[in-house]
Each structure stands twice: as structure tokens, then as C-alpha cells.
Image 1 (spheres, rainbow, N blue to C red):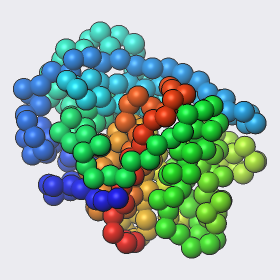
Image 2 (cartoon, rainbow, N blue to C red; image 1 turned 30 degrees about the vertical axis):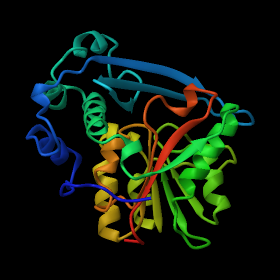
Image 3 (cartoon, helix red, strand yellow; image 1 turned 90 degrees about the horizontal axis):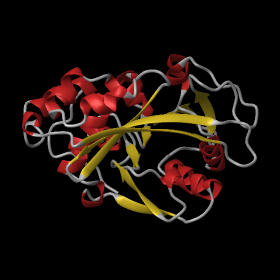
Length: 277
């Protein structure tokens, strides 16, 4: 596993977008067109659980690359697929709703350097049921944690298999989510991200923080406190990669099409920077 990037890391997501618009990461976005903009709305309830996960993704195809970002229900209207398909990429990066801006940025960065060509560790998720594949995925994410027994692990964005995987590594999960009240085992889930960030010895955050605008806060607090930040990203996986070594210490990147949409083997890509922060 390795860190990237070849250019100086940006301090915030908006600074990264500004750099991309100026041509700092490849071709000028004003010269590129988003071939297709589409979205997916799906629900999942894993066997043995009582939580139905409802997810919406907006996705951008830019030539041979895809970018995606989750968003909250009602945040984007379906008409955006009609209005944004065929738009210049710079227009989307400047003017689109934030989740679509992240999806467009993700597609651009993934097109410049696909995860398969970036020196990451490929991890094959096995064929099987949603439960089998979710456990394998979240074990791969938890495997990026470099923690001591009893370490408090802030979990920004809760999925039950990842809670279990953190416990199996000896960590004590501190779950935080805006849409859940408790884990499968009855652990209370807070909505106070700031309290979790203050007390955690390590943080695991979902890529959805990119879409809801909280990523910069998580990144800045982990930088200031010197605690490891692991990102597990379907949303904005190539965007999160741009912050490796600049606050993000490890990344599980899962580009589209995501694992939940297939029963066949699929690949995620793990990155890790050298040592603890």
C-alpha cells in the first residue's frame, strides 16, 4: 500500500477543486464534457439486522471513468440527470449541488489516475450474499486501523459490520451518524460529530462526509490532534485519495460499480501512508 499524490496536497476540498479548475491536476475541466449524469436509489437490510440502509448516489461518467457521491433524500432532484448530462466539467465543478460537484471531481481524478494504476493494494471481495460481501469489505476497512487494544475509534457514518470489525480488532467504537439512533447491538449512536472527534484515538469516516460538507472538519480536527484518519469511500474515493499524507492516513477506495450491486467478486483498493501521524 502506498500514498500518492504527485502534486502538493490541498488543505480543503474547495481548494482541491480550485486547483483542478486551474489545470493543476491534468487537462482543464473546461475542455471536458460529462458524458452522463445518473443516480441510483436503493435500500438494504442485512440478515440478522433491524436497520434498513437507504442510499442515494449521483454519478458522473467522464469518458472511461466514473465518479460517485451519496446524498441525502430530497437533496437533488431527478431532473439534474437531464440538465447536467453533456455539461462541461468546469460548470459542474463550479455550479452544481455539492454531491454532484464531488462526483464530477471524483470522475476527473479517477480518470487521471485509476485506482488500479496507483500502486494501491487490491483486495478482492468474494462472491456471495450481501452479508458475506459486507463483512469482507468492512474487515478490509478495519484492517487499515493501526490501533492498540482498547483504543477509541470514532466512526463517522455507521454500518453495523464495520462496528463489529472494529471490535474484533480490539477497538471501542464511538459511532456517529445523522440517520441512526443505535447499532444492531444497541450501542447509542450520537449525532455530535465534534464530541467524537475530540475523544477518539483514531477516526474512521465514510466518503459521504465529502458530499455533506463535513469532510474538511473531520480532516482538520484529525490533523490538529494528530490522530489517524481512515476513510472508507464509495463516495469520492479518488477525491479522498488526494488527501493521503495530508491528514488522511489510510483509505479504502471502492470505485463504481459498488460491491452491493453485484454478487460476483469485485475489487476495492487500500492505501496507507507510512506510520502513524
